[in-house]
Length: 130
Image (cartoon, rainbow, N blue to C red; front, side, top):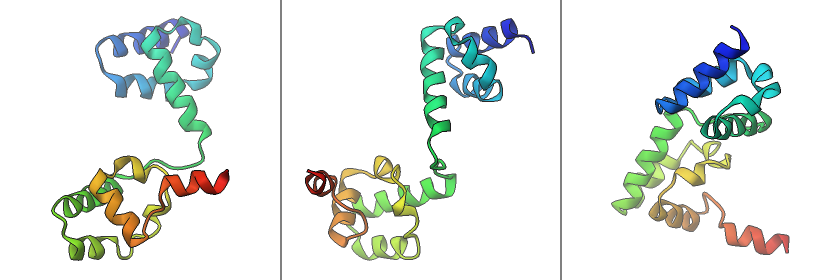
């Protein structure tokens, strides 16, 4: 594809609120878009920054299965079902080592998982660094 077609496709996708398509265009043509990012409209530039940040990050995004597991944990935490919560956490220790998991947990799940020692409190991490 030519540069003009790529930029037009990205800007049109963003204008149509089709952010997934815009992200796909940016990812597929990253080098070309990077060199000519000034041609993108404001929202497309924000998506470009997001894609660029994710490409620099070494962590892989959560899979659908992991997100479903987190949703189940949120449900058990909301119902305050400690037994069900422990059963779902068991065997999924690697999931809770990922940094972005905390962003998907609701407040109830965060409190209960901190109490169980599954995740660490952010405040303790900040105080330890000081």
